[in-house]
Length: 362
Image 1 (tube, rainbow, N blue to C red):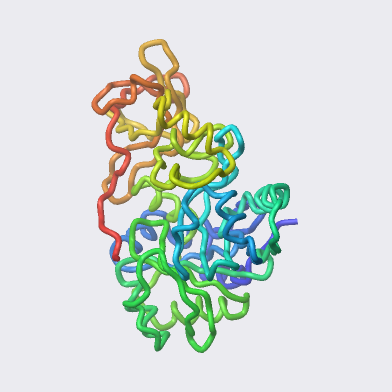
Image 2: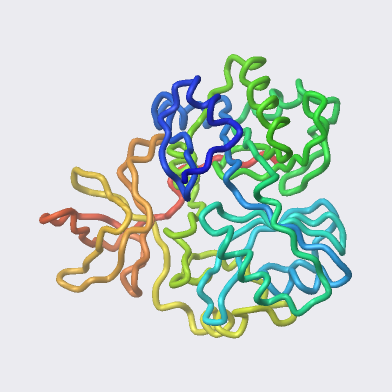
């Protein structure tokens, strides 16, 4: 049975094309990926991300437990701060990448990927050797993401809270259209943006009112969400990260702390960092005609040297580009390789994996 978010009927009324994603009926597009993508880069877009998972960890040893599960340094966090990182297996492979929201030393919220909710919750419970309560709040929490250069001024019209005080990667309880919501400022698009969490009816009201009150706000589907994160080299679990791809190989060492006490997978990640990984995620640029797609194999002469993790014609630049996991020494900028597209080979060149450059608002 396919699940529906509280906004399902609203999506249908807005003309969305609905698809199955992680067991949910979700909008992939309303108009086109290109139009929605451009709207977020130039003005603002709003996404239904109610399918995402939220797991609360509370209790006397909450800080110890989250720090043990998570690659980044939880002890260095202040109240109302958000940190990006991963939960890893003992072998360094990734259970999931996630955001940790810190309320205080005894209360954290883990925001996890929709496709991994059950697996993540089971993993957390399996490793619960601490005095904590773990509550999976995913079924009672809905979420929308408002993203783009006009996001702050649009949301400011709906609240008395001074949003300029809400800094990047922090959160607070904020009244939006009279509903008290958890509001954070992170973003998965390369633009300034806000995530709004709360009960289903409040989220429905906020989504509809924001669209009604802002002519320049576009509803956006998961298609544009993927192209937006891709252009700024943000990873997607199952593509750039997986149980077979470590954070070090994915180029996400910034989210892995080696200055903290033991956590699951630390030994392997530390060894890999010191020895330097044998492969890594790089950017590829297509030199021929075509589109590079997830799963395509990459060759140097006759040797298989990697695979594409995500590929598109980048809507912001119109270049045919990809992120790919490439073996060393073929991962250096400027190296020419070939990608197998059905029965033909096309030429590609290794380049920077960030395809679009724009500063986040701080």
